[in-house]
Length: 241
Image 1: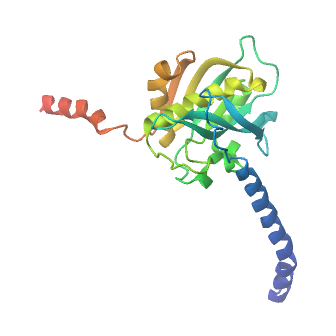
Image 2: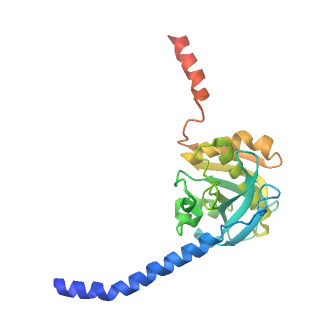
Image 3: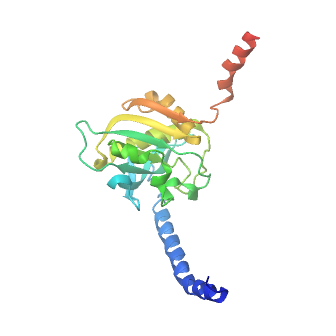
């Protein structure tokens, strides 16, 4: 077993390299975060249209291409806003009619801009089932939700219509990215906060994005949408009693 002084000597020699690695990692993170800044007027435009796109470090599973995106959406007050996210495009040629889309709605990651999942270097590992979705040829797009990633906004946590619009506009953004060759057919898959976002996306799809074809919603462990959701249950219980 190495002596204590030997261990300390090795640690001292390793410290500069460790510090350099931390500094470089922080610098890369700050460089990525700076790309989330938007100028006045950038958010004005068609919902779902892309403001900016750049590569996501590490790519995706199975040789998939991966990008961070900034796209336009709508705030709870109905105003144009910029929202960040990521998109994964499977390798190979798209089928006739384009690739179908799965919109991933993430669980709670925090409430400030630095908590955006697309800022994380291991984002691909945070999307449940991503490798399988890539293997089956789906485009997967993952919104951060408003206020996460893009600075200057308060994240409207658990405000369902805001989350739902961000999810739907992420599908529009996938279709706006030429490399994706995305069709208008999509499904939504989310967990926890994302489960709620998925339900609202399903509720709003026909009115907010009527030319998109929603084929299914998978909502795992969503929080209650509103107090009114429990009213029929209470009435049923009273009727049985």
